[in-house]
Length: 146
Ligand SMILES: C[C@@H](O)C(=O)SC[C@H](NC(=O)CC[C@H](N)C(=O)O)C(=O)NCC(=O)O
Ligand code: NI
Image 1 (cartoon, rainbow, N blue to C red):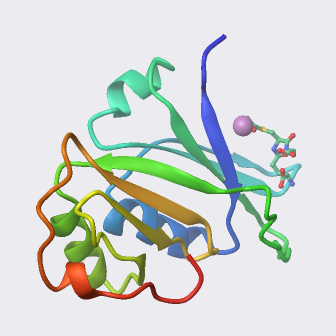
Image 2: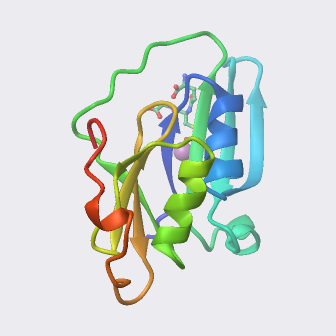
Image 3: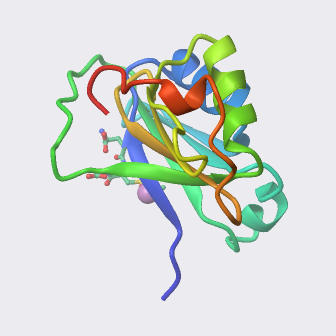
């Protein structure tokens, strides 16, 4: 058995692609418009995984956009999506500059949490050893629910 993807439903596809691709850096691998079912599926891969993802050799995020508006309540059973980054401070700074709230700042140089436009929790983890604590991150408080 192999792990294929995690699917999240999104209320606004354009807003979600702006967050996951332009801000977080994921790459669109494929998409499918389903006229009969009135929905669109967009498959996203982490940067550099796109080629292997096309051969189903890398995990994907599947965004489901239902054309008819629905209200999605955040199930407490769903936790988060997690990505490993080269530099957690640089990633959080770029996201913050793009207007993304850093709900749980990387105080420890290791872990941070942000939220998608639909409130999906995204965990960011430092590749390798934790970075040395540094300002302003070391003294930043959590923002909102994370
Ligand atoms: C392509 C494959 O990875 C899928 O996940 S298709 C699964 C299918 N998705 C839909 O029908 C999307 C529209 C639907 N209104 C929805 O919001 O899910 C499906 O069976 N979905 C049901 C589910 O619980 O995932
Ligand atoms: Ni699926």
